[in-house]
Image (cartoon, rainbow, N blue to C red; front, side, top):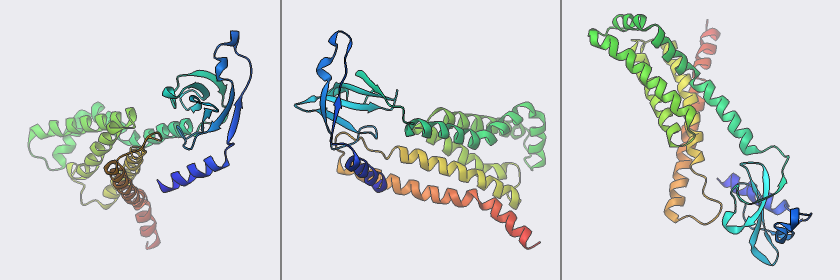
Length: 264
């Protein structure tokens, strides 16, 4: 959070204190918005915003939704509504980050989707695996594969469909499955199996930390209460701890393989 604030301060310091919106509008429509604009003291949607000199209700701001600079009333500040003024051809960090986030999610949940499909299409084999793993009840031979299918499918869908609380719930579901998975298949004593699962868990923890950090971003307009600010600070600290654990787990299997080959 401190780094983001410092970056915002640098961007504000480097920005032009005054800009001019000039040109012609069809039939002089919204011509009252043409003129000089002074820089606002805060960023809006991570971009600069300007208020018209002499009329602070008329604003010029950038919308990350469509990539346009908008002119409009202060009430619409930061949103996609307003008179479209100028298209910003610069790459939008928000869109680039969103696209890479989708790719990362797909890579992380691919294992769970593949496993869920395998359970679905080889259900009889999975039932036999439960018997081999030591589950003596015939009912469990059916219920456990169904549990596997349901948890992995629901968790993967939640992660892919949401970057909010739904995505967090999906991560928790899949993390719970990772903990249960070795015991269900009777592989808790298999070091390589457990470490492979730990590596997958590490990816989930890193994704979870990212989703938690998204919720720590306070609105740029208006203040927040002391309690809300403390909550965001605590959530940020938790997210960073989760990320640190995730990074360790991600490389755990590879470190194990390297160590075993070194001592071979």
